[in-house]
Length: 443
Image (cartoon, rainbow, N blue to C red; front, side):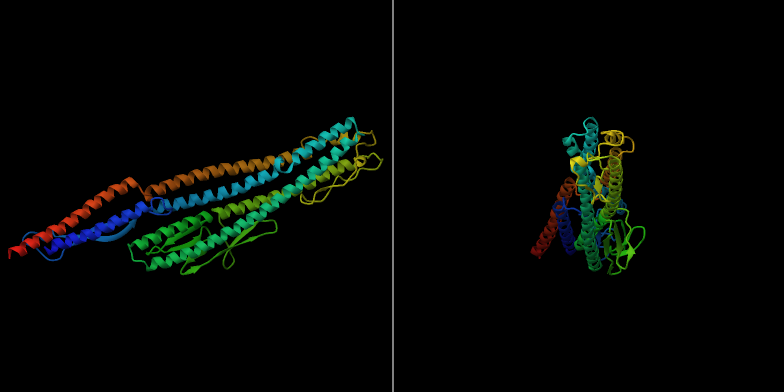
């Protein structure tokens, strides 16, 4: 009867633990990073040899707990991390490129409207070159254009600062997660294999690796206790491993371009994650700032030369319409209506006719339209890449979740099964107790 009692007691212990595991699964059904857990059970080895009732090859000994396992697939997890890193990169880059497109749009800076107004007013002056109102409108259009360039330059400069700030914040979070991963490694080396504590630490390890992969391209390997060694993908620079944590630093150049490095000065080159997206966005903003400066200088040079070729109402040579060599410093010269050089040696409206004739494939309007079209095309390309990366990430995460996620219907079925098993184990103990009592009463 003692064997019967032992079998029943082992069942109570095992099925109680199984019910607790199912309870954890149900409670954490919506918890990010939680992988479904299963209590591994095995038949216990019975002690002793043959008995009058049980042969040696059929000796029930109850049930033992063989530890807790997590429902995970290492390949699917790695694929989900890679695809999520790619999606974070494209989403981050697209967000800043949308802002660049907004900063360069006519709704924000009015450059395109100003250019149209300038040439339209010049056309009107050809019919009435002495009209002071039209002359004032011409100068106002020039001032609006210069103001628009300064506005666009200021917004791009603010964007460069914003990207640098976002990168510094991301790096700080990245380093904090590196420290947290090393703390989890320490815990895993101390945890009892197959325990609930170990399973929780493995969940946290995977969650941290997911977050780190979303920030930058990293690769992880694991020892026999599940502790992670983390390296930079590609270059192989150590980030976490052997009890060491090598943090990452970021620096911003004069033009806003970003550079990342691992402690010790080694370059931290990442092709995925939000840090890669920020780096690409910083490069794009820097390129657009340089292009905006070149466009402003070219625009000012063209219109200054055209205006200086004419003669104003006082018979003097035309003055430069603009000063400044960059978009941020472009300023309309303070001229009076009489200083608008509408005439030339051929007539009172000759210079306005020449200025109007500038409109064409290579005039300031066409160049500015081409600049905006280039930005729109780059943004559209970034949007298409982001859509493709997001679709791939969704598919990879869905495949991963299909293995690890909690199915409440399945848990409900297991809950009923182990409740019945627990009741059966309790009944076994009761039967053993009643049998023993019956024997004692018969003595």
